[in-house]
Length: 270
Length: 284
Figure (cartoon, rainbow over the protein chains, first blue to last red):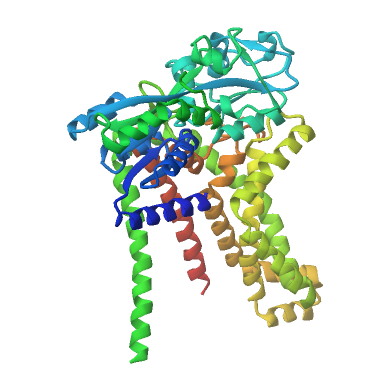
């Protein structure tokens, strides 16, 4: 983390030095989920156009959108859709939000490798996470209590899970809340009767992904919409893109850009 | 000339230190107090549900306060006997050579970053407890308490050792002269004399444990509930702030409620620091 900060700091210093030249600068701030995509695309773009400097910062979707509303960033990256309140705040400040979908991501339900259960429905998931179903025998498994694992309440992954699975239901108090995709997947791999959810890019061989309503989570099923637990990743801008930013966005959505999306472990739009 | 220059520099740095404190306290209270008032003090402190994701969000931090206090008490149960025991051994029993070996080890333990402790708990201790006690998850109050206890141990042992070492030699000699042996001297003469120092060490350890974030975020499991047993996962105030701040909309009620937790945490640590300072002053 410190290394990352150092990297960003040096990038900022470098980019401010380069301001003395005729370089154009683009600032991107926001979601940690989108960070690997943004970094990869920015790297390639900068190597193609050496007179452009793109600085990419994390902090979270909320942080990015706030930065956009305060004029501190050119592009806000986000793993959730912008909220109505945020659009309203922007309008009051004279900022008209432009939304651009750049990639898709699926959320996969995972269990321990030794768990015999292989399919689950959204309804069952809701019952598990609200505490209505607490034993695997209700799902065709053995008589073992379910260890329910969730991501923290403000992660983008939870946000999507809440929207599609929980709706407005209150989560069971017994849910374990873990701070990252990796924490969830490693805990599920070491906890025999656990269930959890992670981004499609975080599936490892140590856990068993479940099919959802009998649909296998894959790039294809996420893109064609048959796999229900999926989300889009966004860039948010202040108004219609112009100049260098427009070029950068066109590049992101181009075939090359979308190939980079795939390389970063996410699902390209086409 | 040189004298006044140094005086000014040191004066400036101490003012700066106080300035930082005031700035931090001000910024936390500025966001936190309006949040707490909007939620309602009673609803905030005694509310049973922390559910900011609902359409009508609930911001009750009672389970988080209970989680923090239980994890901290658990840590003290682990660290007081070990810490005070180490202090007695180092100060009273170990020969000087052995003392020189043990002390650096305690200092190394104090210097290990908390994230390393967290990794140790998550990857090693948690799965071990699952197999050992046949429990459903290794991320729970018990694991968190043990790791927090190990982290607090150096604080308790080094401050207790100072207190024990500063007990005057003639008291011990008087005790021996009356026919007491070494154990009787330690238990009935040295420890009661060092009592205040040891208690202030424990209070400092309490403050350290309740403020610790990384370990509880990684190891305590994070379920916001009142634990039914020591093997239940819990969520602490610090872990809640750390986990949720990044993605929260700045200025929202959720954001302010997180600062509100900061206010509560600040007040608890302030009381513990004041308690330990008060006791130290009383000793003099």
